[in-house]
Length: 338
Image (cartoon, rainbow, N blue to C red; front, side, top):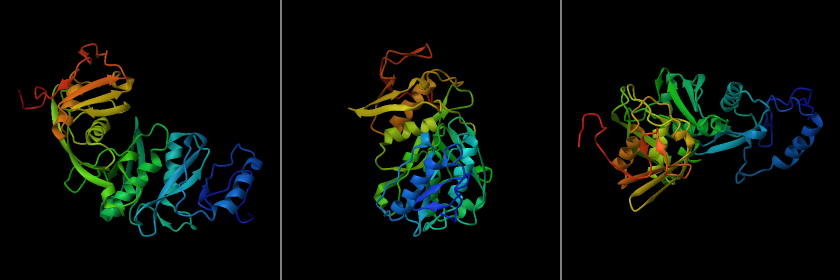
């Protein structure tokens, strides 16, 4: 332990076995509380095998930093402990760890050496990450794993549910030239060796136009876990919001899906109360038919029942009764009438 100082401030970015103690790990905690866990890590964790699945506990300052294995086929989580609570500082700190693999870890960072990280900003639950245009030059498999590593690492921070990647001043695009859009930790698997574990799906989503009175279609290619139902994926992407200029959100970005199921072509969606508290400047029927028309466009769903905290006895925006099922309607789609 003499090489790495257990002074009054910190054990810096040095790895103990597979666990990294951050610059702010000691702080106000007494050194005696840290010595035993560190000694245990030195003698017990250094021999941990690949089968181990470390866990995070953000409430206690315990995060997982995701790197790539040496063959760039899967993600490797590394425990990192910090006392930092400020969200902006925490983003910077975790990104610093993400960009710098501990020297004794046989892994690679998600980004290649040519890619420059330019910074971040947060709007509500979305964290925007900015890289230079070299990001787009990464090989496809590595880039997908990099997305996954970034998303899994940073969405552990409380209040950050989505990641949106920008290259230069433009959003990251898929191969069809459509914005990749918002990413969540459940969009990705841990490796690329099993090609059946994830898939790309092109969705047609309906968002509000600039007036807030009509719906406009937006095509989007999404890489997602095959265990995520298409219905769940569609609603999650609606919550994530549009990626095209002139398109506006129909659902609040902080609303959560409490449950979603499909029975006899009826999709039952239970949202939390944030769904009802929307202040978006759209017609009161636009959020409803954004969901209904998007689902019926891509799935076998013909009707949708919306609930809030398990109840359908709700007057949405004091106008629309949710005590009914909604069917597809083209009345709100721009340029179309039934």
